[in-house]
Structure formats: C-alpha cells, structure tokens
Image: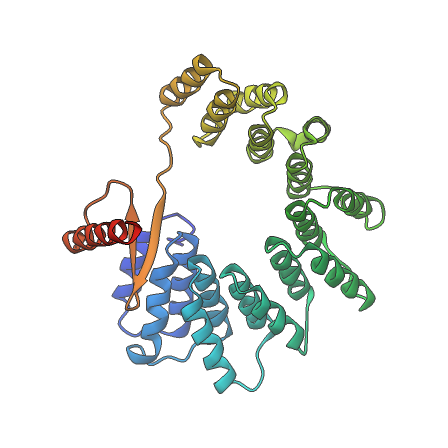
Length: 340
C-alpha cells in the first residue's frame, strides 16, 4: 500500500519494524526499492536474507534481485547469483532465466545473454522478446531479425512487445526499410494497431536516418503523435542533423505541452547554437528559467566493498570527501608527470 501511494520512507519504516520477516516481506521490499529507483537497498536486503533473516530466496526473489542488478549495471553480483543458482538448482524457472538474460544484456555482456538463451530448455514469449530487445540494443540487429525468424519457425506468435524490440533493433542499426516493413506487417499481417511505443520507435528510426519530414508526417498521422517522448525524440534528431525548419515546428508543439523536463529547452538551444543564432539560444535558456524547471543533475554510482556510493556535481557531503579530493589531486599530478 505504501509503495503504491509513493512513500518509500513509510515502506522502510514498516519493513524494518517487522521482527520476524518472511519471504513475502522481503520480496515486497525488494520490489518497492526497484519501483522507487533505489535497487541498491533491495540488494542489501537480499544479502541479509541468508545471514540475518535465515531465509532462502524463491523464484520471485531471484527475478526481483536480478532486475535490481540490471538497474545498477552490477555484473559482479548478478554473475554471483547466476553461479550460485547453477550450483544449487537442477532446473531454473523460465522467468528466472529471462531475468538472467536481461541482467547480462543490461550489464553489457550480450554474449553471455545470448549463450544463456541458447541453453534454455523451455522458452516462453518473454524469453524471445527479451533476447530480441537485448540484441537490438547492442547493435546486433541482423541477429535479432534471425531470432525473430527462428521464433516464427518454431510456431511462436509475436505480440506487440516483440515489434517494439524489432523496431528498436532496426533503429539502432539504421535498417530503415526493414523497420518500415516490420511496422506495416505488424498492422496488416498480425492485426496489431500501432501503439505509442511503436510509433516512437519508427520516428526514432526515421530521425536517425535524417528523414525528418517523413518522421514528422508519421507523428502527425496518429492521435498520440503529440506525446512528449515522441516530440522530444524528433527534436533530438533535428538537433543531430541540424534541421532548423522541422526543429522549430516540433519545438513549438513541445513547448505548448508545458514539458516537465529541461530537455526540450536544452535541445532547442543547442539546435539554435549549431546555426549561430545566439539571440535565440539566450531566449531558449530564458524560457527554461521562466518555466521553473530545474535542469536534471547527473550522478555517478560506484560500489566499494559491497557498499554503493552516489556522487553528484557540486555535492561534497560524502563522509570521506577529504580522502577522495586528495586522491584525485594525486592522480591529476601523476597524469601530468606521465604526459610530460
């Protein structure tokens, strides 16, 4: 209830107030941490399940904690969990294997993800979709298409999510014509009406290929074409290819929707800057200031001895900040000596 109401503080108070925690309690907390973008906290509870709570994780725990490793890009813990499962379980539930594939892919180990997929004794539709998406994100679009064809040969009917993966794969590899064919076949052959995710992928595909007028036409064709994500993707492509004409039209629509992110203003200012229109650049930044939206702060997340540390620009609140600054200064001096 607290998770769905958006209160992580109350989730934590309730969880830690329970003296005898069971497997459902831990699973609920791990799931809540992922929902609030704090997967590292869920990972710490998983580590305590054996030693402190005396619990053995079930398939729901494993799927949840592997998802947490994916969000943290933490291959170290993810691989350890996979190794433990190989040693202790004769057969893994299909959902857990799907989570392993996703974890390896999101941590950058696409060869491991593909290897695990190939060894699966039982696959469901999620298995096929997971590997297609993973291969596409890593630039292996041709292999993703081969997997899709194998899926059809095995008599597995693709669903709407399958085509999101295919279109995304085509977009990353610049396979414009193939992507349009899959988009059309999804509608005409399989009877799936295009959703916002499909149109967003198609517009991204066309935008990357500098076919911006065509991408804009698709955005205007559908009722959800004025979505913030779709227009933001199109504006990003306009910035990339320096198309000020389409970019200004898209930016006008985007700003009329009163975005809650600073991205449209930043993209617009960069687009103006590429054309040397400095007065317009200043105007874009003024619009951002007047909107009351703050530019999102980037951060780095590193793990040392199993503990996660978050660093943001200009934040000196870390307990060991003095040691960190001294070490950075030493590394800076060392790099200067080496370069000389």
